Length: 254
Image (cartoon, rainbow, N blue to C red; front, side, top):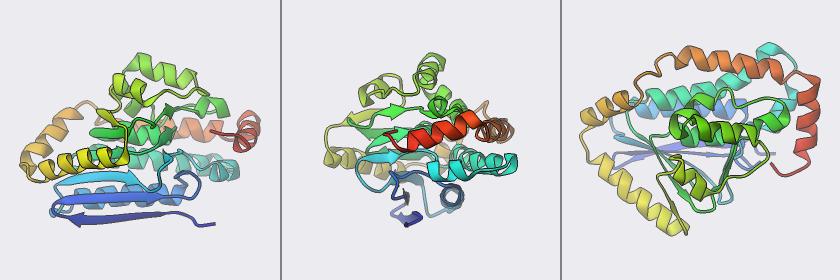
């Protein structure tokens, strides 16, 4: 099976990073690290003034962690290393000296909600429902939690984390602040994104860098915090409860 890919381009000041995996754009460890590396690289490239993060396909923006990889984890170190991949992506988005705009064209689950939350500005389809499914498989949204809670607040985050089998609509996600706006067609979504990123590409890079730092002030400890959270997940993923839950979950719809 195709292992997925991460691709990037820079054109007219817009650094576009696209990812794909045949299993609903889920993210195995190698893709997570490629994605973090590309975000860091484009963030440090003076030719790019803004970063656009997107995935391929139409039905799913990102299904979060790769279940095939989760079930193969057989040691604490491997578990920590895998979940540290999500930490690396979120921290790369946080520390990039440019605004990250996310295009969410389909459903977002688990780590996918984390990506949408870590972006500075997220636009979505009106079909882009969200779910934090981690508790349903015996883990918890520990690594993505700080980004999600920062974006939508403690109450809405608690709701998503506890209702781990329930989808929340794109309209709900917009109401809570995860999405800036939602659109009824891909054409309208892409038109809005194109207008936004071109406007940002023509804006003052220094001003945007300083604004980005101001937006994320108070998260400097996340380099350590998210690794600590990865350790929590790395421990839980080895439990019999989680192994059995993941095997059952793989046979159904996330």
